Image (cartoon, rainbow, N blue to C red; front, side, top):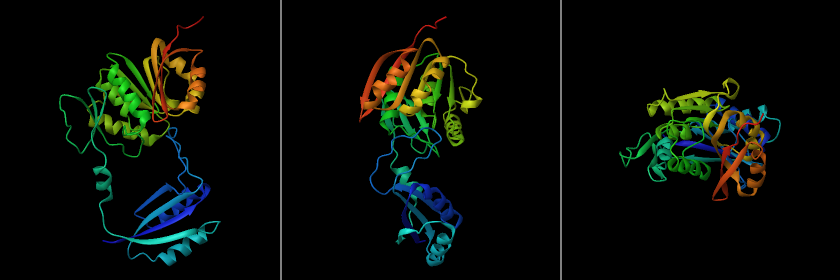
Length: 295
């Protein structure tokens, strides 16, 4: 069946409301995209940052009365709807198109991320079956890849691990597959916790991985804390992370731009000896060791 694709540009304060109106008006799918090539880096868990000029695309059945739809939307919005475009679109399995672009990826020597619909290319490897669902995290972003490579090189054998800002659960599952005793996956986005639980079940790791919202988590010290979020929330969480990591334990921080390295390092130095840095594509991974507790 052919489709009609509606496109319009809007300000970020209107974008989510218009997207909801399109969904309520019968859109089969609604997407938000950058209209002016403005970069948005990996967002903190649970947030939905938008671009200064946001392109909204709605997919509608071909028999939709688009003139009536536009009139309906205009009546429900405060500002004029600009740059309104309607294009015919031929039938395509869009979920299959996305799946076809997500292939098995290797990190380090033995760790592989494999879409759940793919057969792992190397059965003797440490294979993580992954469906990101509604949460961030497939391993394609440099920040995630840096963390996966660290885990591959430093298997957390028998360690208690926290994955803070777990997204799809990719780091939590990697830690569990590489020998962690127990993993606590924490995120303030319930969809992330659902994706993590689903992926843990897919990898037969439900008994090793527990999920929590931050306010639900009881701060039991861990041996290794992984946090792939962003620089500002990382700096805000430094003191809290110090309470969560046992003396001598390790912390791995990612989601940090190169120019933010000094600021993030300074935020952690009261509690951690920062011991290593790795850079890729303008992103930084920091490694630290928890200092002995002071009286």
